[in-house]
Image (tube, rainbow, N blue to C red; front, side):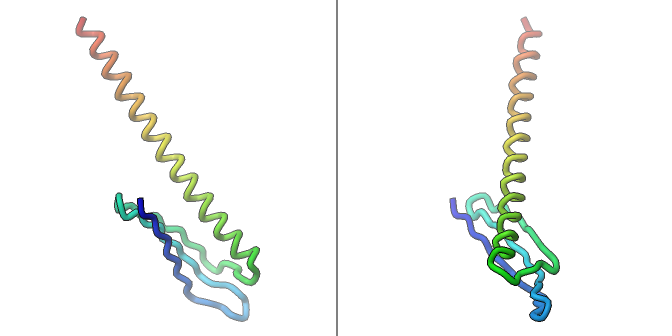
Length: 90
């Protein structure tokens, strides 16, 4: 699985130490992409920049967890429906 992250920084306000930042995560195997964006993010210190990365990673993990939950729900419903309808045939 080849995952890449791209980062784009625009509208840099040097005096205010802010910028618009967007991240694009691409899975080259599935072709799926995820985009995360921040407007006027404070980027003055390493800690502030790390906080942005932490938020992006947290949002990514939450989205991945939601997809796993949805897939699990669908699988369970398919199995349940198949079993219940098959039992009615007897």
